[in-house]
Amino acid sequence: TELMIQAKYFGNSLLLNSAMQPDLTVSRTYSGPICLQDPLDKELMTESSLFNPLSDIKVKVQSSFMVSLGVSERAEYHGKNHSRTFPHGNNHSFSTMHPRNKTPYIQNLSSLPTRTELRTTGVFGHLGGRLVMPNTGVSLLIPHGAIPEENSWEIYMSINQGEPSLQSDGSEVLLSPEVTCGPPDMIVTTPFALTIPHCADVSSEHWNIHLKKRTQQGKWEEVMSVEDESTSCYCLLDPFACHVLLDSFGTYALTGEPITDCAVKQLKVAVFGCMSCNSLDYNLRVYCVDNTPCAFQEVVSDERHQGGQLLEEPKLLHFKGNTFSLQISVLDIPPFLWRIKPFTACQEVPFSRVWCSNRQPLHCAFSLERYTPTTTQLSCKICIRQLKGHEQILQVQTSILESERETITFFTQEDSTFPAQTGPKAFKIPYSIRQRICATFDTPNAKGKDWQMLAQKNSINRNLSYFATQSSPSAVILNLWEARHQHDGDLDSLACALEEIGRTHTKLSNISESQLDEADFNYSRQNGL
Image (tube, rainbow, N blue to C red; front, side):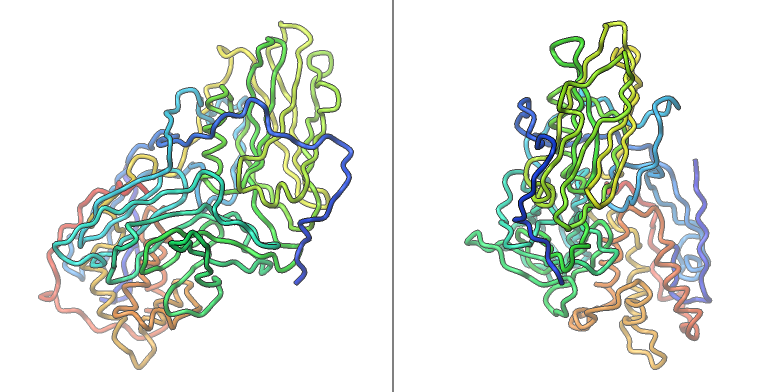
């Protein structure tokens, strides 16, 4: 299948398709038993390839801009179709696909391979590239020219999956994984972009979020607040990830201080089930973990070793920093077919256990029992709600018999197979076109059509002094665009930004055809992102 993407451009201009803090120490009395870790818990493992890659599609970009730059009329890109992907760093919600509709969306976990650590490496040179930690939302962009010519470096990334080395102080909580990139002594000539997922709801100003770095002595120091003005670092906070421009490698993480009790952490809630040794018993395990892809990977891996089956598509729960606990209940159990063991139908988790749930995955276990072996179907609801807060319902409908159970698969973003991409194929903007943009917008313009306008039209409205210190502000802005749009299949957002500049101001002067590079941009878009 071929997707034709048309972009609009103006003339020969450079358009391309393109403070009240919650008290975490408050003690409360609960009517139900407190959730405890399941005794069957095993050592958490991680996955190198949890999900099947999606089939490639070819994307053709056709524009007057390509023609005006002397590039072939149709530059062909290869992308991956991710119209239905999960988990995805920028996915706000998950649409429910009920098993009765015969639509597969959850993968059989028993077929998943294992991996002992979350670590990936790649060798990069002057042309740069991307390094991706598959299915975690963590990635690293090495710009073209960041490494001197005739040099190459083996660059690595890893995620701390053990006990966090960053210990929270006071009301501060860890909002992201601890990400290490190296080698630490590597020197780059232009900033690289590190993307780290987070679980804070940043739609309202209830957080003070900080970027921290671990020193060689093992202590953590604050690099900057994401709202700070700084010329040494830049942080751009998106709803599900933070993109950081840095010039030194090391170990980084995001922390947050709630300014009000309306600060919200986004949790991912999911329910797994499996038969116990007693054939009449069925165990449900309900997880509430920070809404980052790597946190859910731990859950999937743990359940795989226990023979667990994901029973419903995970959902997002907005958990407020208001000191109120979390209740998890099993509802609507079919009478005369199933029963739940006494005193386990409703369980309650203390606020502090949920708010600081950045260690082992938090979950509750429920024990159900069939009255007779002839009962092969289970349907019920799982209600997860914060007292005086948000609520989510997980609908369980499954077969006890494996032969009758739906083959349920769920997909991930397209970074599951290609952790490292080097050279031009790692970038969405062809290099010669990138050069034209930088040459145009790095030059001061009397009408204000310069790199500052380029930044503004790409929703970069603060800490512009950072870009002013760079030898090519436009190039760094485009690096940030590449990091933010690594999952987009086209260049539409950049095209729209440049087109708006063209509508607002007079058109740029024409570029002579003799100045253009005759470059072949027919390269693979399988960039693993």
